[in-house]
Every structure is written in C-alpha cells, then in structure tokens.
Length: 183
Image (cartoon, rainbow, N blue to C red; front, side, top):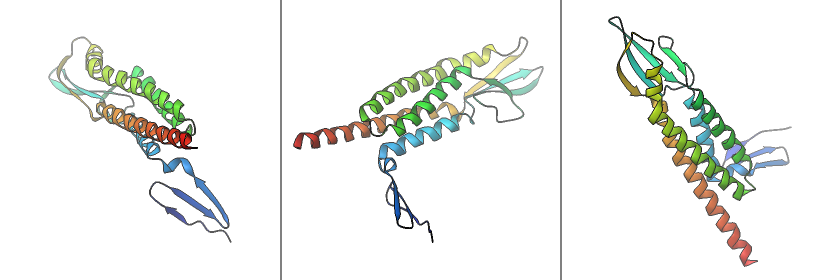
C-alpha cells in the first residue's frame, strides 16, 4: 500500500512513498523562494498593464493600454516587444538559475546579469513606454492623460528579490568556503 503524506518543514518538501524517501533539496534554500517569487512576478507582468493613455476621439474618451499581453476588451492594445523579450530572458534565466543550485558561483554571475536586465527593463518602462505609446496614437487624436499601470512597478520587486537571492547565495558560498578551510 502506497500512501503519500506531504509534510512541509520550513522550506523543505519531504515526500514519502511507502519505504522510499524522496527529498527535494533545492527547495530548502531561501534563495530558491526568492527566485520562485521572481518567476511569479515575471508571469504576472504579462497580465497587468504597464501604462494607460487617455485619448480624446472627437469628444469621446478612450483608454489606450500599453501592456505585454491584452487583458481588457474595451481598450486599444499595443504590444511591447522589447519588454516581452526582456521579461522572457529574465524568466528563462531565473528558471535555469534555480536548477543550478550546486554551482553557486555561476548562480551569482547569472543573477548579476539578471540585475542588469531588470535595471534596463525598469529604465525602458519609465523612460520610453508612455512616449512610445503616445507616438502610436493615430493622427487627429489627442492624448488627454497618462498613468503607469501596476505592471510597471513589478520590476522594482524583481530587482529586490534578485538582490536578496544573490546575497543569500553569496552567504552560502562563504559558509562552504569557510568549512572547506577548516578541513
């Protein structure tokens, strides 16, 4: 008879199949949780608008949504291709980093690259998104207002989480090197 009790001990997943124990050791590190949160935010960024523009169409008001993926049916959608590429690179590299848990130095280097990607992503959003969206408005229409959407601010959370993961990985590496020195 095979039973499957699942018990979670502070960031540690332990599955028991009859007499066989399967341990997933990479989940026991806090940096893995930070990186999983970065993945969740990267996916959420695809579903939240980055900016809104209010447009005047012959006396009628319309909302122009600048986002990675269209969600609302009553808005004009414009895809953000540069942001799609940057967020996809961020997602894929973060996923790879999670599974490189035995090679901490490579994880640190990849996370430094991801921090750079996040800073470029954030800079692009806040420097160019509203301007690019305003350029795509057809001639004869007027922009009456603009605002950043909630998706614009997700990149700040990603930067903080990547920094926390990198700091935790460096802490692990220092601990391992100090224990190697003692042997």
